[in-house]
Each structure stands twice: as structure tokens, then as C-alpha cells.
Image (cartoon, rainbow, N blue to C red; front, side, top):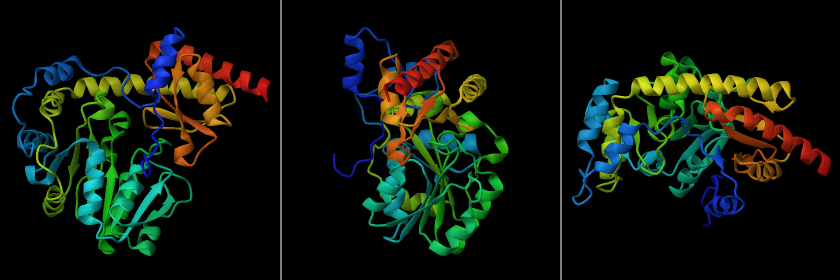
Length: 351
């Protein structure tokens, strides 16, 4: 549809075509935990009572996660995925002003800002060399600043002290810094996690670490006044009963999350080393994916699909030469490396 962000995941038509050709696809186009979902999360979602309305404000879920994070319930808002919360943020706090987006990054930040009537300014991600993010915030004076950390699709991490400086710069300009930590569970640097503060809001998600994108559950953490303003834009029953039940079940699964992150990190290192040794241009990453320069992302993706792997073509990020490859289950890593080398050789022979 017009105006929608192209997310580049594997399509139903591609899945059907692969099945017709006898190809069992490994979907690495969405960066999800290859070891999830945990059985407890699935069981809770399936057992949820769907014959009655869920709580209108997801109050029980919010209170439970607030205790987990050492916050009050008024400092936490649950939503129908972080995407909904991004749009609500722009409507509630954008004031038709400027939005600064550090990229290349997730396209919904800019889309949500434009939908709220904001002017969008882009700047280089603070995780990249030579970036001067605080100075840029002061120059732009945005109402909202969006920072994905670790960043999608580069995997770059912005240190906590830089986030604090960005949040302070945003507050001086009368705005807020929104830090999207959807991929932070795969990095697990405890000292890098942003804490809600004046001028700073944090997005967290169950989608990636628990591999439940179909359930749609995300959280916004921040000062009570800001949370109340965003909640005023949210319709009731935004969090479904299955999503709320899954969110409650996920509370006791930190050991599973940490073990998943450890296994993903080991496979990521193996994949990075092998691709770099083979001559691919691959970016260091602290997320559960790698950004790889393949020359022609669309052609590479199409050829790799025929070999049983779906990856993300990064043209929608403004990076048409790249693909984003989610870290697979360790059992698939060797076959993925071989397939990527085969595709590169085939494309070179065809050109």
C-alpha cells in the first residue's frame, strides 16, 4: 500500500513457490531468536481466554514488568508491538515539529513521524565512526529523536554514556530521545541498557528474543507524564489476551534468553569469521544479524532463496548492495556459509 514501509521479509508467494519446488526454506529475513519461542510462552498464549475482553489497559502485565524493571506501573506502557508505540509516540509528543532519525535504520520511525505531520531529518548512527550526534540534536532541535540500539540493520551499539549525552541534548531542546532496544537482549551488555530519565524513553520488545512476531507485544518505558500522554492516544484493548498471557510467561525466562543470546553470539562469530575469510564485506555486529555487502542485494537474495535461505534485501534501508542475514540455528550455519559462497560464485559467472 502507498506510504507503507517495505520490510523485505519472505512472502507467502515465495514460501509457496519454495514448497512447490521441494525447497524447505530457512527464514533468515526476520531477525528472530532461532531457539525460540520457549514452550511456556507458546503454551500461555494458546491457553489464553479469548471469549472475554482482555484488560483494557493491560494493567496486570504492565505492573508485573514494571516490578521486573524496578519501575512504577505508571512508567510502563504495553502496546500492540513496538510499532504501535512508535506511532503513538509521534502523535502524542511530536507536536508537528521535527523528528531526528539516526540511520540507516528501521523505516517505521520516519514513517510514523511523517504520518503525525512531523518533518524528518536524518543523521548518521552514533555507533559509526565520526558521528557527532549530540551536536546534531542541538542544531536540529527535534521534538523526537529515534535511535535503534543495537541498530537495525548494522548491528552497531551506541554506548550508554553517549545515550545519556543524547538524552540530555534532546531535553535541552525541549524534546525526547527514544531508544529502541528490540535487539538489546542479544547484546546483553547490562551497562549499555538505557534507563528512562527526563528527555529519554525506551522501547523494549518480546518479538525478537522470544520469536513471537505474530503475537505483537512491546513496551514503552519512561517518565510518568510522557507515558500518560502516549497512553491517551492508545485505544483500549490494544494488547490481546494471548499476547498478555505470553508476556506474563516470559517474565520467568531470563535464563532461556541469556542462553539463547550466548548461542547466537557464538554462531554470529563463526559466521562473521567465515564470511570475512571468504572475502565478503561484513560489518561487525552485536545484534542477532550481520550486514553483508554482496554487490547486488536483490539478485543475491533471489539466488540464495533457491538454495533454501531467505535473507533481507536492504534496498529499503538505502543499502541496495547489502543483505541482512539473521544468525541461524547453529545446525544451519555451515550450510548457509556454503550457499552464500555458491551464490557469489554463480553471480560472478553470470555477470
